[in-house]
Amino acid sequence: MKYAIRLANHALNHNEVPVACIFVYKNEIISYGMNSTNDSLSGIKHAEFRGIEEIIEKVTSIPNYSDYYKEPKDIFKDIDLYVTVEPCVMCASALKQIGIRTVYFGCGNERFGGNGSIFQINRDKTVSENSYTSYPGIYRKQAILLLREFYTRENSKAPEPRSKKNRLLNKDNFPELNWANYVSKEEFIQLFGEDKLSAFHQNTDITNVDDEMVGELENDDISDIIKWSQKELILKGIALWLTPKKGTHISETLNSLSSGLRLLFLDSPEFEPHITITSQLKVENKNDVNKILGTCLAALGKDIKLNLYFKALVVNSKNPYFKKVHFAIQRNEYLVGLAMLIRELFVTEDKESAELWALEQFDPHCSLVYTNLSHFDSASIKTIKTRVEDLLNLSDISINQEDDLFKDLDIGWNGGMLKIVNCEGNVQDWEVLGAVDIH
Image (cartoon, rainbow, N blue to C red; front, side):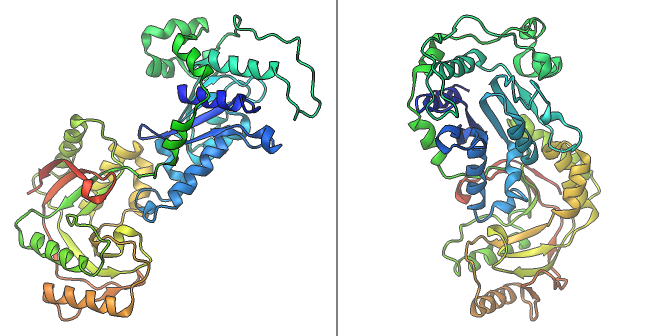
């Protein structure tokens, strides 16, 4: 929030309403916004919209974003918003529609507030999905002081400019903060702790204008925030993989095949062939890793083996980065059941959402090549086919270019290793966080 306060001060010093925000993804600032209603002479140029638009642009510029999110806006379920003033009704509605995870704001918006001051758009039940919690009171007094400072200054772009030479900045008196208008007691405790509960009951602030924040109020330099927001967006996810055991025939075959095909695609990195059971796992520490792997073992039991069969070789340059060349895997009840369970417990925390994902989005496959190549010519496809046939000793293999023709292949494996992998950044930087043998 201190960065948002500094942005708001920058807006103030450029004759704008001092409202600003930052968007945080996986503990990193990826976008920011400042009101530009004065400069644009448009009442809809609010801080939140500037930040939202930048994030959508960043996601859509990533070739393989669909391997992480079904739609670009789905990234907002992993993003928190810090904004100096409570979102107005318009912005609150937009945040609900895109599915923002959590909102933290400074002071209430007594005229147009959409998170509790006037309406609770964030909790509206007319459209049940995408409700979000909005926490007030984060450096509230600082946000109020910035607004008061703006309204003591002359505004030449106002419809009817008023003389404000006799207005004084009130630095001593602040309105009560009625916490119950915005959050429940349980939500308050979850963020601030039970030791701060007296503030909830007494409608008082939990933060004051300390010396550090006085410095932020006077700081107009936002170069560091701009620099952070201009960094390339790296979609982050922790995934559950199923791999064949090292040293087995299928493991050596897949690695040899992948190595051979990479020679055709100079941009293809080296990776371990695997099936992704699910991505976007919520992992904070080693205990979470052990819990997920333990749940997998308990779900599979001693007698269940994940018997995997390859349906077809899929070669399609229209596919996302991770799926240009891959084996499609036959779905079976154990594979789908495991994926759906782990998705429910450690990703969505919602059974219905996990079931819908398993039905519509779960596409088990084993990739052989990662590439951004946008077109495969007939010679490349023929070479891929020949190499696969030679290595797998197949005289006739169906290559699927349209995702609608499949031919059963006598290839696959039983059991293997379940691995939790941190798939952040470049492929060569991916890290195995934990693994377990499933016989």
